[in-house]
Image (tube, rainbow, N blue to C red; front, side, top):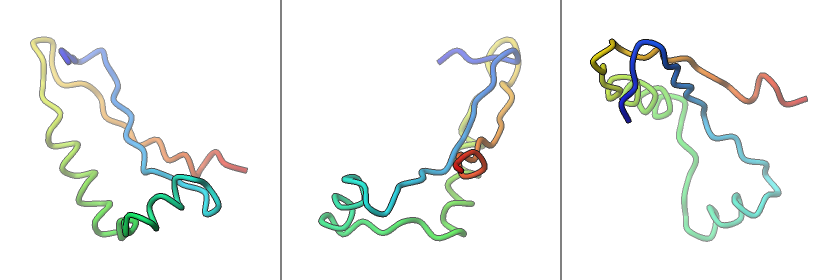
Length: 70
């Protein structure tokens, strides 16, 4: 994507309401939510995979939507 030192990449865990159509589709497909350890590993791998551009590495920040749902 050509990201550099002036860019910010926000990583956020997926948050799905229990009664949403997405959650129903997960159940039909047999998809299980990630465990905390699996989520941590996924975030680690995403962070490690973000490459530095010619201007340097972008900033990476956690944006946890659960902090903003009331």
